[in-house]
Image: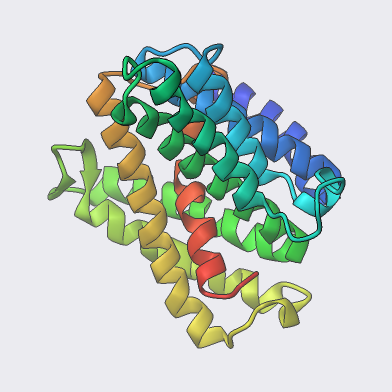
Length: 266
């Protein structure tokens, strides 16, 4: 427990200035986190990141995360991040030819979906911050309050299992408690926060879609649990002592940020 508290404190000391400053700092930090996320997925599968597909998968995630106009300004104006990402896909598929079918399209599929999963999630993390610090903070508060509420309410009142085949400790009561916690925190945040014009909807609608974001965040957590169960690992990594890996901490956010974008919050 002490180790978890120390790790959380150190992580916050590093993380808060980065998200507060924004700009190229958060872009670079998100790219680094994306590469670590790719590394963790490759590690779970028993593959080396320092390999043909590992390097391309990491590069594909970076191409998705870093804004083209700031980091790849030397490219033609109409080139975009997705084309850069697709370039890595083309090279991966070229491996089928170069290897004379020893490398298959099924094998190429893993690095592609890995870089998409991690890259798009962190790309929207950066986009949320560029829209405004308040928007990013709202997302973090929704996810964190969901996790905390689900844990404590599930521990106290949880009886019915939510999805035991994937995550045996999660309960329906805990899940509902997480949603309730997120709505309460979002309500307080939206009432007292400055820059209300950053949000596209009024308070009742924001609270309604907060429920959606809380559910999506919990689903992202279950997805990560399913991946770990498939590969028979407890944590995605060990970069955060007592907390696991980067994907263990960002699994919910990697799902929430793209859905926030879909809802037009940034």
